[in-house]
Length: 253
Image 1: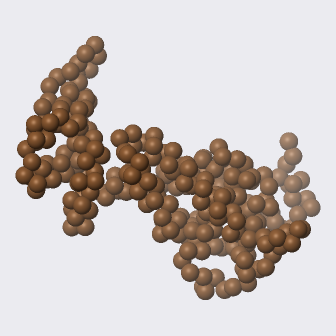
Image 2: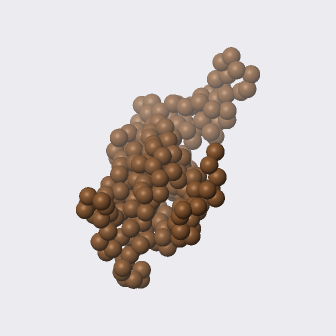
Image 3: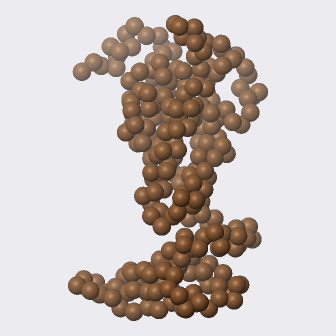
């Protein structure tokens, strides 16, 4: 195995410093630094490759945007099985919003590695998100999809993605459903009963009725959990009707 010392035997100290800075951000070792140099190069440098094509982060942004969208979409699809297409699209948009991407770029201090002829303080806020997307694109081209997925999981999903907060900080779906039914003068009822089956641990099943119609069913290890799960499923089923009420409640919080 080639040692790190030998790798840098013919490289400048500046290149070595860049390597370790990128490695620290990624959490793993980059293999081809050319993609990362491109990801951190601003168009103001007017850099070009051997074929005379512009060499800056803008094309990598395109790749990174696609990677982020697909990874977040797959995560939401798995974590929120009740969410319909409209819900999943809305949630993904929140995660990859320009505001959120800018926050990610700032927190990683990516701008400190950007090569530019323009003073840093003259850049707008979007530079942070642009470089973050370019970095994701560079990881894909350098290491492939699995490593991009690992980076997004560790740097985006685990520290920043909270499903309940993204939904509008809904703390109790049962309370939300009850408030919505009362506001719209709809009759509702939680029918809860023991449903142990062949399992040793006691389980409870619940049917949630709205206007004498079963809207959702759920099963869990306690009445409270079963009712909350049934209410959550009702929220997803009726989200287009309940969304205005949710937004109003959130704004008042």
